Image (cartoon, rainbow, N blue to C red; front, side, top):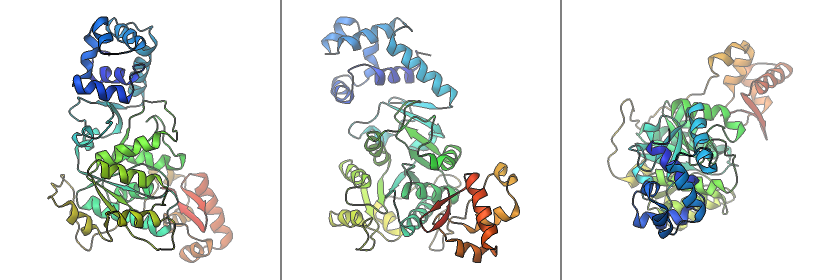
Length: 384
């Protein structure tokens, strides 16, 4: 177990007092950091490693499973095996070359799903967690059409624009990558547990954090550098002036990526961030062709990926899976299919379904209990 290349790189991420600054400094003199694991005590101290780090490496060499760091690595590997999580290390053939060259690239990526997608040409779609209905619609439509053009949609699985982008790609029949700020044995936020399962089943979920790591606020800026690092460009759909999306966009610029922004109403607070980016030189876009034109180079389309023209078919609505369908009556299925990902009022749903208000409310309650529908300001909507 400990002899694998992935285990060695994983061990380095657990090494005490061997954080990002120290790793970057060491990489300048030792291109293959795993060489540290075969050095003797005197050499390790000459490299400036702490006493705790030296002791851990010596314990690793002796395969001393009573040492705390060695024990931690073993537990992570067991947890990865239990949850079908792959470890893609710095030297692994699947480690994405685009990510390798960013400042502070992670030494290890944890993945669930199809790790072969890491090598695909990607575009990040990001935006506000409190997106407007129009913003959610933009995210879904752009994700679907960019996917049809051969690009892989990458985002952060957050509420709002991120979730709509993932759902747009999946509903159009394409894979998507979600980069998250927690361990892959859990899905965060909880409202996206079904969407996360769809991403794992039809795409890839990525994290630099080992199983068991909870979501923390400090993790999300770190996650954002991976989203931009994997992508050739970033599309910002809606963003406030002090949002995480603007931080990601600035990271993308620092990494030499293209940044695109969709304009909105001058009166909308979630459009101000996009307008600010446009003032700073981001490309204003209102259609997919604007993005493809800016990226320029011809895309090599993966097998089975259809190219859309101006009349591209937009995503169809999602149906519950077979087990959930079996638990629903015809009335609830009709209500579910009348719903979209934007809130709809009960009056509008009564008109769409032909149901009286009391029956509609009963059906909505049952759908909520099944985890398929949520209430929101303005009515009810599907949970992505």
